[in-house]
Length: 281
Image (cartoon, rainbow, N blue to C red; front, side, top):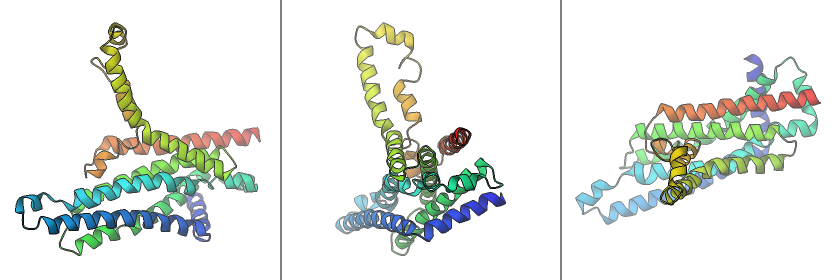
């Protein structure tokens, strides 16, 4: 564990001794802050507009109208920012030739990968920690959000970000070009992000086919009849579908296990990729 922490500390120093960390954190705070401000302004305007209408006024909820959109926007921003964080983790080591020196030190491949992952994870925690001022600002006003759903939402955002980091690290291990690593990670994350859209289309298509003359074939395949459909299976691997309950403040172990599984398998595959390159080298 000492070696892992040493490598993680090296990565953190690399981030914060270069403009990368400050640019990433700054852009993240600027975008999330703008969305938070816009949602808060809209919520305040509605409170002023319906202040004399108790029924409508009581329906206005700061968690639903301000906090939940904030978490949704963080997921989209992560889609853009995480590849920038992970693109240099292993690709730069290979490009500069320091990977050979690093892997010939008395450390295992797993320790190197875990250390780099923890270093990137620390930057992710810093990014999220800086946004805790948003709900604190609301608490200082007359509108007080429910903190339990807020903390659950932050936990979900953290898990999704960690899953993104694992996928980005895996792509970075496959190339020595940082631009290719960033674009490849963005493409992989976008595919997992948009797979739920495809799932809806597949469900509609299967429903249409089962109403046609090919119903018997689909019945034999048990697609959509008494079992999971292709759309259901695609939803199971969708990053966004597993995040929806967290946004609502609902903590479900199924979603926690999903994100942790993505992290585990991403790190495992990264180790396999690095080991294979070492043997070929």
